[in-house]
Image (cartoon, one colour):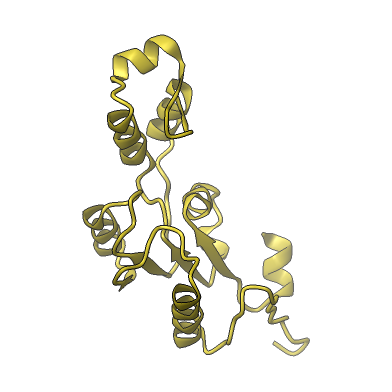
Length: 167
């Protein structure tokens, strides 16, 4: 991150879902000028516990077995749950959040609590899902970033703003 900070005037992070969660855990928040989280996982412990409920798995069962394969294709891991509990994310970077009202992985209450607790801007796309994928959802996403950055973004184009030699 030090090399990027030396080379670029601003570092903007765009992350979605679990990528937003891992970004919050990476200790990079002080290097980020602004972050854009799309359908972020902001409370991994809550999500894991919810997945345990979906799979009818108790904490005692998970602890005993270590790893449990679920019918919905996700493995539940006792070691990972313990890690998540011992290492809560810390995030201080200015952050804009885009959330779909039909997101099935993060509840509206969890995303609102995160946004309110951390003074983050929250935009809710009515009818949006966890994975933004339709043409209308992607256009909304592009316009949302344009609104906040003034930079037109398409998802197949890289956009870098190098630090000028006199800045």
